[in-house]
Length: 91
Image (cartoon, rainbow, N blue to C red):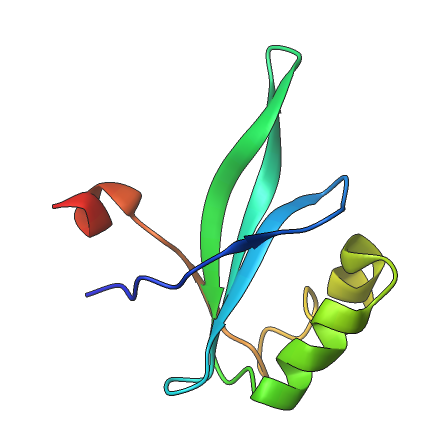
């Protein structure tokens, strides 16, 4: 069963919002969608093994998108991720 993690909107072209569950060390990222010229919330992903310190660094980053690209995106072995089935969360 997927976790429900509270998200906070961030200033970013790529990332709509982020959240963290310290108990399970899970990072939640909702990416920005640009479908049909409309900008809004897109897909939600959870990244495992993400510590509170990792999250603090992400929150403090001047550019969330650059931080994601440099420290999270290509670190699949360190931070395995799953796309969240939001229909299952709503059930």
